[in-house]
Image (cartoon, rainbow over all chains, first blue to last red):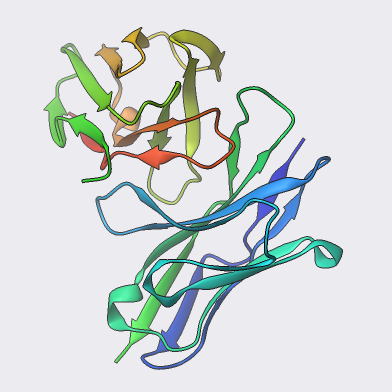
Length: 115
Length: 112
């Protein structure tokens, strides 16, 4: 079975500061990993994904994430936060074993950006 | 526009009403999903359809009834709902799920 842990429910940063959102996963097979963003009353939008190629993955809106197998982590970062980054962020893991692999989501974390 | 379209965007219904949520994708995906997102709770996977067959039903009450007539369309039929069913209902599609899902914008459902 696979799982995702996103510690904490809320992160607050100042505009221009580093954004770091943590994600740890558990998977019995090599994982594919994803970060999604959700703005209020919208669906989830894919930010970036790791699918066993480069361990440092760059996504949209200046976000990136690094897959660290030894730490079972896939933390999301952005060097300089913008007010428009305020949203909810979800980490997800998909196993590669099945014909219809299922995404398992973390509980999400809300990012606030202070002026 | 994400490629997955959900209608209506907002729905208010009484507990005795019958209504349906619609989801449509033209991405060539072969799997479709319904999720429920309630305030302060994790995303709840409700139903999974793969190649138009239901492959997962996560103990969802029978007042929710999914239908997948073809690979591009997914419905969620609702009847005699409860106020606690008020939530954002999200539809998603994927190609086998390996490379992530594409989500619709959701239907905000309020049961009164």
